[in-house]
Amino acid sequence: MGHAEHARRAAETIRDASPLRPQTAVVLGSGLGGFVSAVRDAVELPYADIPHFPCATAPSHAGRLLIGTLAGRPAYVFSGRFHYYEGLSFKRAAFYVRVLHALGVRDLLLTNAAGLINLDFAPGDLMLVRDHINFSGQSPCRGRNLDTLGERFFDMSDAYSGELRALAHAAAEETGVPLREGVYAYMTGPQYETPAEIRALGILGADAVGMSTVPEVIEAAHCGLRTLCISCLTNYGAGLSPDPLRGDEVNENAAARAGDLSALLLAILARL
Ligand code: HPA
Image (cartoon, rainbow, N blue to C red; front, side, top):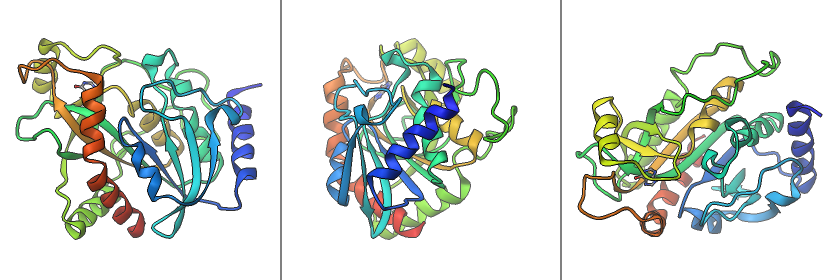
């Protein structure tokens, strides 16, 4: 059975679990799982019950899909995502995007926790991702291309949809939640960066750094989903502060910003 068939089967299971037919999916990053309390009338599917889904193992990633309503609209909410550092390939980490495409989803709203590099920003800031730099050399689209899904060689210049970013800024204005904008550097992890790496990433144009999101953004650009990503800047990148980096601190700081991020996401959803 090929990848496409796997995606079709996973989509079938998800479709059978709820009569809702969302056109929007939200993915919750590290420490941001609290947003699930905003989902109304949810049906819950553990990832283990969805055929061919990888299991989420990262700390604070619960590993379940909620199908419910947000701001009065149907939505898929993924609590827990998939990472390359867990041992998954880029293709496996981005598999759920193929499933969303099979389900007819149009918009993908991603969140993550990231370290800040640009010192104009402060820990706790929310940063709309304008673009990324993929420091892995990997792609989920490596291998035979499925022409029905997208082109072999595809454009990445609007991978973080300009339309959705404009809408996010409008939502930020309306809710009064400050929203910065910048470039996200992807590093594979699981180790945090070295201070020299953080300096190098800054020189190369990155404003923030993290270990997620990029595989699925590439897959989404391939199959034509509109994508938005908001990073919660949980900490200074290595070497920018005297404190050593700790994963539990990242989660705590993300959780502390979950209220504002939720308000912003709901205002964005209401405008879709
Ligand atoms: N580096 C990489 N990933 C991260 C960081 C960081 O400093 N903070 C949260 N995710």
